[in-house]
Image (cartoon, rainbow, N blue to C red; front, side, top):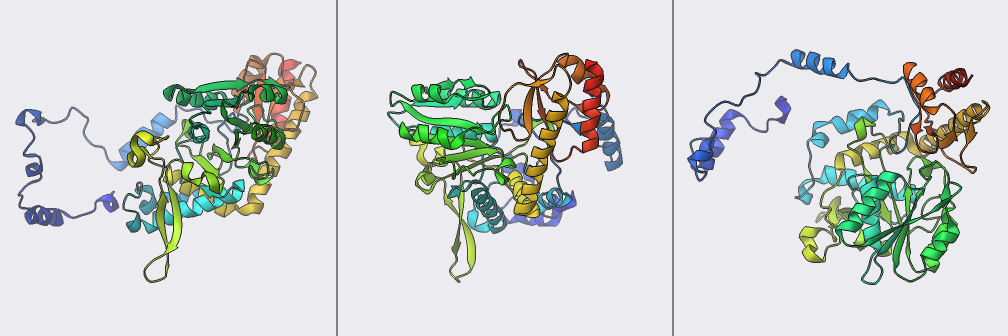
Length: 438
């Protein structure tokens, strides 16, 4: 921990002397004496590094670690190259906070600028912010971007992750706006229902997840055309790995692209911390929440970075602000940047291709077993929903064999396959399912 101590004891005494004080307690001389703690804290004595390591290892040993993970539903088990873990762990990044004195934080600003650039390349959009808390928050903030005085209704497809729907609903409740769910048909957004619900000129925006919660690819371009014809804005929530091989949100006509950045080098980590990415077109730039870092030149003509915009924050516009976001996930964004840089376009395409190919392989093998069938037809990425008899027994048997099976839903089991699952793993899974159903 020595590197985290900014000054020596002698330097601290000198600083106290310079401001006319003799002791640190003098800094709190205006605090009433009754507020002082005059006893030691009731906590155990400190332990050595080795003792702490043993204690933490003992606690960690109670966790069940699965050799094979075939569950997604918002958190995905991707391979993370060692360099992606190493660089963000450097002290200058790990201990840095939001750059309030932006001109003194060139390294942090550059890392954010590079992240924004990569997100724009991935989504095809014009501008990205410095990130928000998670994908669900990004969806809710995007919905807020679309609203104006006359249009206060947000539409969201029922094929969206339930957690995202609930987060957007919470935001709408807080601002006294309305959320309406567009029903599904055969696992995808019902286009005719969407057309009907867009009538009335009170809808500000429509959100669709691509691929959706069931793993299916939505007809995003057609949905976007329907939304724009009604004068509303089109929001796409995207899986960043899938973006390596599918049409970008910009190509689909999206006004705003958001998503969960966890697949970009962040471990599943019991659900966080994660990363919400947001990108939009140039005309909507000033509606983006949080911060936008820009590139310019200094007085010497050299490249430098600045905090360009923070137009929607509550401490800037107060009662006129449409967002309360005033921070960002800088360390997680840096991790995502390192992952994208390490993988490169070809590497990310390879990951996406492997995910999709292996998911289709597992789906075909499982469907070859009597009684197992796909819940929905259509193209899917790396998740798929199966109608399976003895679903609970299957998941329990897989668990016994060190395999985390798919997510149990009311309709069946939602499976997910990433590049980390080998053919041996998948064949073993099929064998266990076949054994249970036999």
